[in-house]
Image (cartoon, rainbow, N blue to C red):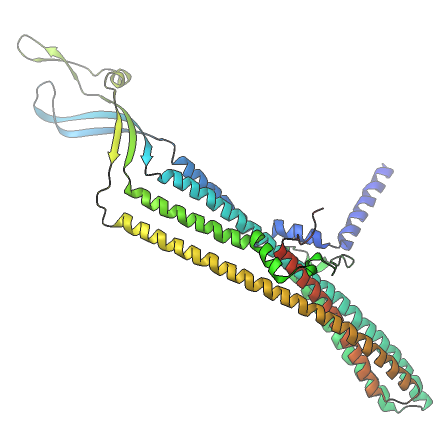
Length: 455
C-alpha cells in the first residue's frame, strides 16, 4: 500500500512538473491552432452546411410521399339519405389519403443542382484549407516574434550586467580619485534607463506570448512558453528560385486561385439551372384515398318505394369498400411567366461575369503578393547582412571605447554612447534575422513548400 501511494505521488509530481515546464514547438503550435482556432471551427461548420446542401440536391431525385387524414363532424341541417329531406342531425366523416410524386424530367435542373452542390463542397473544402494555411502562417509569425523578444530580452539583461560592472568599476575609480563623481552619476542614470528597457522588453515578451496563446485558444496563457531551440533555419532552396518561377508554382498550388476557379464553375451551373426553367417538366404521381361515415346506409327499396336503411358498417370495412386510387403523369410546358425565367438567366450570366473578374483579380493579387514577397525577402537578407557588418564594427568600437575609458582617455558619456550603439546593433541583428526567416517562410508558402514538414 505504501508503495502504491509512493507511485501515485511520483506521477502527480511528474505531471505537475511537466505542465509547468512544457514548452511548445512550432509543429505543436501549428497543429493545435489548426484544430482549435475559432476561424477554423467556423469554416468547418460551413463545410457541414455544404454537405447538408448536397444531401438536399440528392433528395430532389427521390419521390415525395405524404399521408393525410381528417375526421369531421357535420352538425345542423343535412340531407337524410333515407328520406331525401333536410333535417337537423349530426354525422361524422373520416377520410385518409396517401399521395406520391416524382420528377421524371425537370429541364436538367436537378442534375445541375447536384453538380453545383458538389462544386460548392469542393469550394468549402478549399476555403477550410486556406484558413488553415493562413492560421499556420500567422502562428509561425507569432512564434518567431516570441523568439525575437526572448533573445532581445537576453541582450538587455547582458547590457544590464555590463553596465552594473561598469558602475562598480566607476565607483572604485571615483573613490580612488581617478574620475569625477559626475561619471558615477552618469553610469547610474544609464543603468536606470537600461532597467526601463528591460521592463519594456519583459512586457513585450509577455504580450507576444499572450498573442500566440490566444491564436491557439489556450486558456492558461500565463504559463505558456515555446521551445527556444526550435528556430526555423534561414537556408532554403527557395532562394535559388526566381520570382517568375515562384509565381508559376503559386498559380498551380495556391488555394485562393482554386477557390476563385471553383466559384466560376458554380456560376456556370447557376446559368444552366436557370435555363432549365425554359424546358418542359414531367411529373409522375400516385394517389390512394378512402373514407368512412357513421351515417345510416341504404340497403335497398321496398315494394312501396321506400328506402330500406341500416346502421353504418364498421369503419375498417368502410375503408376497404370505399378505397380508390389514381395515378398518372403531368406535363407542364412554360409559355409565359412575366420574364421571370429570362431575368433569372440574365442575373446568372451577370454573376458568372463577376466570378470571371474575381478570378482575374485574384491572379493579379497573387502576382503582386509573390513579387512583393520576393522583393521583401531579398531586402530582408541584405538588411540582415548589413546588420551583421554593423554589429562587428560596433563591437570593435565598443571594445576600443572600453580600453580608452579604462585608462582615462574617454569620458563616461562617450563610453555609454558606444555601449548603447553596440546594444542597438545587437537588437537590429536579431530583428533583421527573424524578419528574414519569416520572409523566407512566406516565399516557401507561395511555392508550395510546407511550413513545417510532417512528422
